Amino acid sequence: MNIYQITYEPNYRVLGLHFWGCNLFCRGCYKNYRTDDLSLPGSSVEQLKDAPRAKNPTRFLTLEEVLEKTEGLAPRDIFFMGKEASLDPELPLLAARLHARHKGFHTLLTNGVKLTDLSNIDEAVFGFKSASESVHREYTGLSNLGIMNNFKKVYQNGKKLQAEIAFIPNLVEEEEIGALAKTISEIDRKILFRVTSYFAVPGAPWPAASREQVEDAAAFARKYLDDVVTMASDSRDNSWKPEVIL
Ligand code: SF4
Image (cartoon, rainbow, N blue to C red; front, side, top):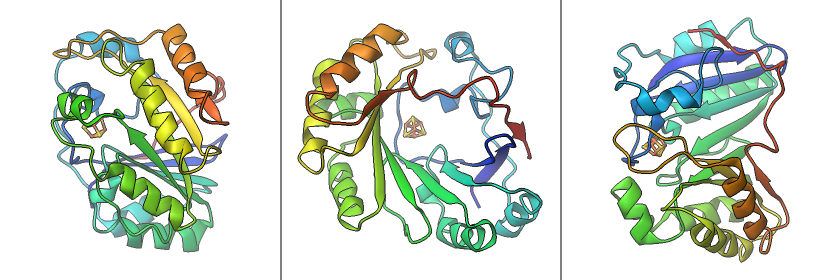
């Protein structure tokens, strides 16, 4: 499989499965500078702006190894996260095996470019990069045509859905975030929408977003949507202590 890291948070009983490989080329992708889960102790987003380029992972687990490494754990929530987990053809089978064993709640974090079999995924979180195609091309190198259609398809299939977008100063600001919120409101204004902060990385021209910028953009999105949160307003407390399983 494409899984290169497994993390587990025993207080919240959250298992994180980290997949390598992506079908976008975001200029601000922090995974180019830190491959480890950013919520691990000792990590800070401030370190990213001066970080050297990280080495790509070289060790990947088979499906059976993932099952074996996670056997003694009791996760209530399992996150399939990335880079882009949807690209792994064995994701549906792994999700089915984990559902059968733990009966937990499965969340897929995705950029939405490619849909996978979501039979054993309980909720999909689409990480949008922009509303407009031109900004998407500038930031990711590729068009965003198709992502919103995939979002609608998942919604129409009755799957739980969230949307999120990062505030990127001078690139993805209130206008872009508002336009995305408006489009999503035309599907269902009750869909949870999260505005997150961009973290500055070397080689990309944008500074880190401030909390005020994120909150202002979230307030703008609330003109269209009923359930808008920010990374700051739904972040976890100090009891969040994840461990690296592998
Ligand atoms: S979609 Fe996510 S993982 Fe992929 S390049 Fe963009 S930021 Fe990186």
